[in-house]
Image 1 (cartoon, rainbow, N blue to C red):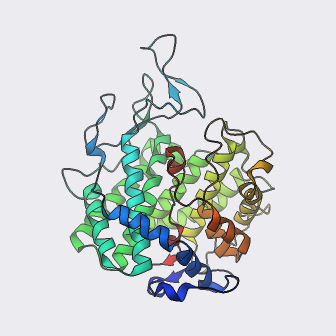
Image 2 (spheres, rainbow, N blue to C red):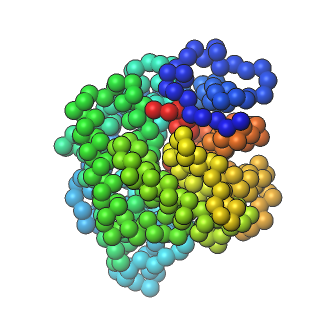
Image 3 (cartoon, helix red, strand yellow):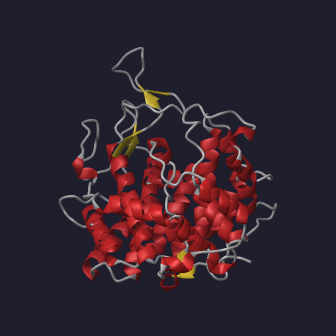
Length: 396
């Protein structure tokens, strides 16, 4: 049986009705069980989120940024000072994060994502508008208010001292707007955004999409052969769904079928380009999460990417089946260990819950249920943009 996303109204029911006595099955059983299983965690995170005040890119400034106070700025994680001379351009150490680089704007965006996702999940659980009202203040701060809003581009993301004021690969930083956008869709469905604010926010995302689909940085990222190309599709899919741009949604469907699957996946379901990296475990899981999220966002009646198989037999089911044993037992991983953060993985990956629902697979669900749902390590957080997969399993 294939899971189909539920209507929002079906999810807002008393928690007592979520209890189950046997295997979770059926179109809505797994979704209800996921909310039931995480109820305490959802409430805890929402209580934290309710106490947070908006923090945007205007709260921190780096003197090395070529942009202004409203421009997002970050520095490439794997770039370090050259020991030969402190004034020379930075040098690369792949997979090794430089803790001195400026990432305050990314941290603010991750925090924003965590707040928005937590509040949206609590609303679905409890049907209390206070959660959406609290989220609105953050949305307005980032996208509407003139004194705190972010400019809708990433011209200065993942800069490298002495080499680049910004790079196309920096576009991956805005994967942390994914759950923000899903929260916005839930808020819109609930009538929790004033029309003027909704129009302004939608205009912001339309402008950002135009930039990332026309600027050289965006074109470079779209054509990236690895997880960067996947994350470009994932973002455009999410943002175009919010803005109502069907043409870009259709384009992302085609790109998934014609580019991502055939060029990135091997016949056994692995991702060879990720396995060659210095952090093969983390990157392989990250890319699988992104592809599964693409399937979750873009699947619709008549276009089920979960069931799509390209001409050589590659499909998302193979990708999940390939990585599942190594999430269940990391010690069975046959490739090199990640050069950093090996011990911090695995966590509760959204591909497990999405795949459990899509393929009615109890093993995927039970593994997702028992893994860590509240990681705090920054490296994990920046590589886990979907932290509340329940909020993605509704049709809006």
